[in-house]
Length: 204
Image (cartoon, rainbow, N blue to C red; front, top):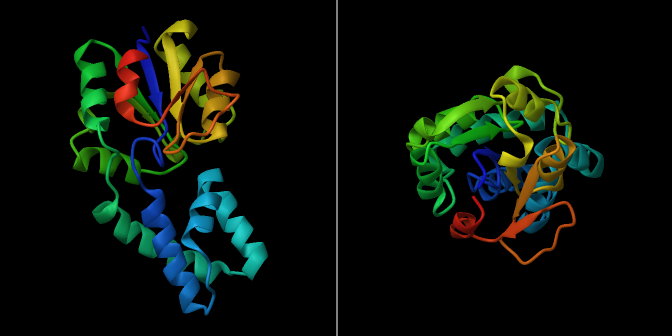
């Protein structure tokens, strides 16, 4: 049984990619640029920052474009982004069995606001966002911080995420890794693979 469950945010706890991609596509369209939303989501699943770099090279988007996108995203996502099905139940279950949920995200304080909005905040023991300034995943630095702070036994901790960098941050810290995918993809960096969160009950 895992006593310490470390969660990624975008694409894991919350289904934010469709919201971010829709807004990005709309801002591109205003520049007379058409891009399939599936391709935008694919790029954003690598990471939001790498997606911006990708499109900066592909379409020479400038700082004004990025600022417009960030502003609209910030305005819309608090209203439109929602947790995946069964997230509240599994986080509540972990908390109620005297175990710990932790947040580990590259996102800023908006992640905390969304957890509060959907009544999830109280199920978490600690939160690591961009505010703390840890090296980005797949660096293990943030997970090592949690391990040291809470005297976590490595075999009792697991990182859950939807990207290789999430899984690798866990493996680099010497803990287990669980890959969440809405498809049927395999992943060599994962100890477990799930495509719905009900499956976590047999893992954690």
